[in-house]
Length: 184
Image 1 (cartoon, helix red, strand yellow):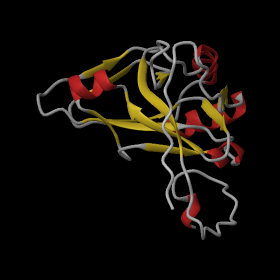
Image 2 (cartoon, rainbow, N blue to C red; image 1 turned 180 degrees about the horizontal axis):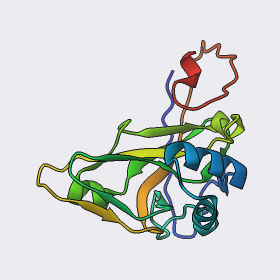
Image 3 (tube, rainbow, N blue to C red; image 1 turned 30 degrees about the vertical axis):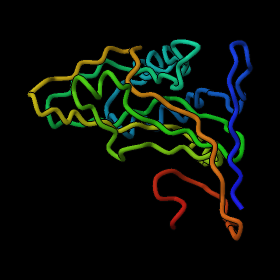
């Protein structure tokens, strides 16, 4: 039997608080940054790391937490970039963080996440890479527009979503890694 629950949200009602953003350690960020952008001087990586801000909502009615670009990005049509965000997230069980491009960038430039929707599971936080969230985005414009995103500007948004499991679920494995780590 499926029971549907409906609730009315009243002004002033508190939302569930189910997650906390953190920065990854500087050592993890340095490793991931140099792997992604070889040849970057360590002093520059340190400056980038120190400027990283935790994701936050723009308004009380916003569903999405804005992730901010750690560097200036210019993407010509058809070009992509992989971005180490410097962010990790601690999430309660039965919740997931779904990541999308900021809607304005998607609308104006067809900025797309390369995996269509980034899924950050609650157990990713405990991975060897500290649960470092990466974003790979592509300028998929059909109008020849170049995307320019300044450092510190929101480029991606994350929305927390509660999920359920099947009655006969028997998953017992423990995650240790990112992309594809649950099917190894």
